[in-house]
Amino acid sequence: MIILCGCELTRDSYYTFYFDDYSICVGYDNMEYMRLVFTDNLVNTIKKNETIKDVDVYFWNKYFSSIDVRNYYERSIDSNNAIVSKMDLYLENLGNRVYRIDDKVLSESIDENCKLFNGKLIQTNTKACVFGKRVNSQNNVVILYGDYLDLNQDRLHRIEIYVE
Image (cartoon, rainbow, N blue to C red; front, side, top):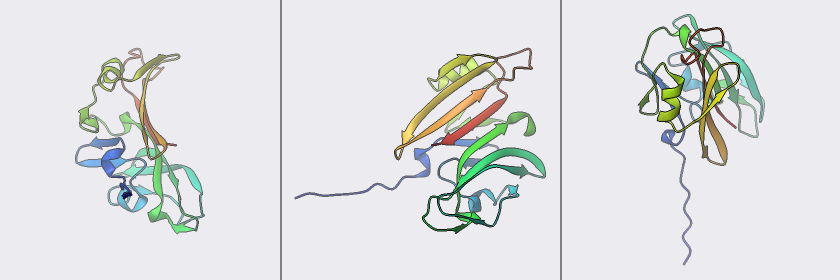
């Protein structure tokens, strides 16, 4: 007897970014979920297998992030059904808040965050930390960046989360 079972991916399978009482799960959340809190200027219809890049997203009328959205279907869909495939977030736009990835609170230090997530520290123009995991045959990647214009190169400035 052979038993075949499929496991549906849950939101917990991906990295989830939290701030205040809000969360964003890149690779899982669709635009309908995002529009509960955020506003955007995304088109109404997305063609089959199309990715729309660099959509500006606003939180309380302030620039929040640039996101990419993807239509994984073999037909055109309403933009509400498009999945967020990338988020590029500048933390200064949100002000002083507590940020988390999954259940881990991020510190201002890239070094400390890199140790917390067992990431790979990269130092070129500024510090960055890369970590990720495989989800549904795709890479779910998080990159924590410093600001090369800041005297403190270890200060967390930007977060990029994507699925490819």
